[in-house]
Image (cartoon, rainbow, N blue to C red):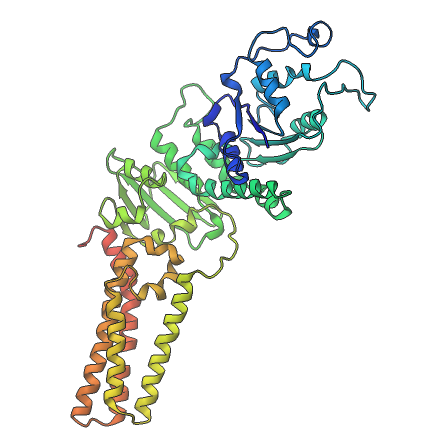
Length: 487
């Protein structure tokens, strides 16, 4: 199968529309597709002489790259038209190429409704796919001229139109963009198997960000305060304004004001988060609930995904004071703003369920044996086994308490957060120590013939106290580290 890509973007290979196309090609397995890059080709405009119809049939009198391109078009089984939307149609260079296809038609009229010309060669086997990005928040309602032109020229064709295409080039948003491109890869694979199903098509038509979020980011991206000449704004202000625009008000939990201080350039801004949206302050500051002190270069690198934010915080590269819950909810407050489908239980979640069940069973078994007056040595041995079980995981990649606390802090992704794992490593050691002390206490009680009711009370006091300590420590220790406390 011969696949030809006609890349009509003036930006060539680096274009956003080509990123869309590359994903589709990967999904379909068309790694060796032939690519015509219009901007690198010498394609002059059609002069309307019609010599290719009457004087030199099938051959254009203009001596440029178009003759070779026509041969590649004729040989192709599948033609992918790739371009950004320009003034609700195709870019000028691509329109020249489309116009110069006249030698592929015969001059005679077909008699069809509205008029037409028969093909010089049989192109019935060919299939056409149009892949395009546009700079509006949605593709809907913006491709009428494109649909009319390609439909008139080629009949039925497959299409993927992506609004918010300019976001493809913003490294800070690459996570959400990659989610969309993965859907495009899926569409490529499904097209090859017979067609793109409705569910995938619906996902392709989903906007990357909500309309208000996208338009605020788009406005901020130009780096100007107004259309007036000389109104260019500061780079850090434009960057911070885009960050504020990413606020997902659907995850609002309370009014917040946080201040970000760029320590390497001596500038500070405040972002206020409210139920109805966010606002950026450059002066008239109020008392912030959270203060982030960071070099601008570091924060930009974190936003671009070049540096992992929690790891940089754990290493003391920036500091956070005040309400630390902002950082724990950061991904929710400044996420993609799209509803996620419920995920299938991961192996991590399943292990957490089994471990929780095993601990409950062990506790129940110990209580039952105590009440029944069973051998204290057996129960002490059970507690020692639990102490060993918990203690060993202190030295593993995932300390045991991670399985219990991750659900409250964003799930399995928290395992990549060194502050989270360090906090839980300490807590796991505490719980291992609690089981060890219970075992020692049981042995001591047996040795001194302490009554069973005293043993029951004594063995059940440490756990709830340690539970209270755990709830406090999970908040206090990360906040202390974020302030630059002792590591």
